[in-house]
Image 1 (cartoon, rainbow, N blue to C red):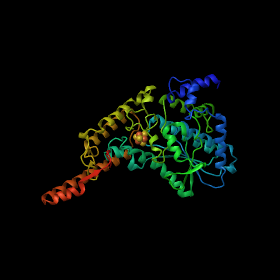
Image 2 (cartoon, helix red, strand yellow):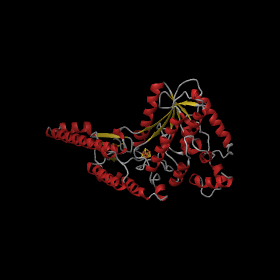
Image 3 (spheres, helix red, strand yellow):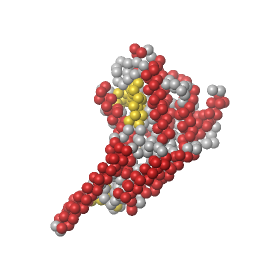
Image 4 (cartoon, rainbow, N blue to C red):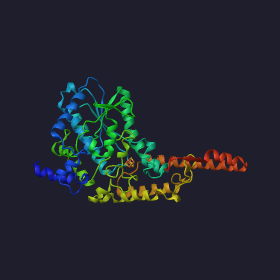
Length: 433
Ligand code: SF4
């Protein structure tokens, strides 16, 4: 690409990640936290390739697991890893490489489509080149999906003080996959597309793993070593590389670049620990769950709608409605599902889950939206689990009422019985299940 064209392209691509008024040269400086001039990107890439080469050649069989979110950083890591495998003679492709994506089942539809296509392309290339590559997609446990918890158990839409979704929908599914592989092989190496200068949060998370070695033990996952090959790379280097190099699995990175242009922003990376979790649903994140109510204003779909994908407008409105009803006391039960009433240490009453009428209304509206949009927004298996939970809640609630009535009939015993299961003073402000 001619230099001027490349600079024009980069100035469009990174516009949302740097001050709007800065020139491209200033933007490149902005991308470096310590304001020092950037090192030569070709040198940096050569070093990264060397590290990948050396690490893969280590004399052991620990499989690699590449966390693949479909975003620019994890795509670059997958690109470099697959490229290295292709360059090796068959006899030296000794270690399995798993390319693993996570689908929360409420992902932004365009992003998930992009991930599915990417994984299929990688799998096809692996077969064609006889590469030891396994592609996989992890999903939440059927009992822990977004809709099962929101509509089935009535958990209020997640917010900053009660973000029940990330662990259930992202951390656990990927962690389980890593654990399974570690159990089979003894140890695994997890490759993450983390970059220090992506944000201050990422820099903080990255610093926790700094031990001066190439591999670091994962803080939470036993038998998991973390390898961050592109840690020190600049954002501009990543874009430049992806624009100028065709992926080793064929095609180009144009679809990814277009996706960022349409979404107009950052990504929601693969997360395997709560330390990574702040990056899920940050204010700059545009790739994430379309249902995300943790951010004030949704950006995961808004960018696509602004780019002309009008079909996502009803999804945006639905998500806004979930935010709106969250704190309406008329839609919430007084007691939590375990029968307790929560009062904070400051004496503030905290509502329980959504009441049954609201859960029913959410499901009805969601099914109507699904029919209108012709997109699969909720699976039949989720609807069945939701109905089971409703039946359980109704039975438990009826038993609780019967018990209270029996206790009332025996006078003073009522107070003792009621006190034993009804009240809990909590320190936290948020509601918990
Ligand atoms: S993107 Fe939002 S809804 Fe999805 S897991 Fe992260 S915080 Fe939860």
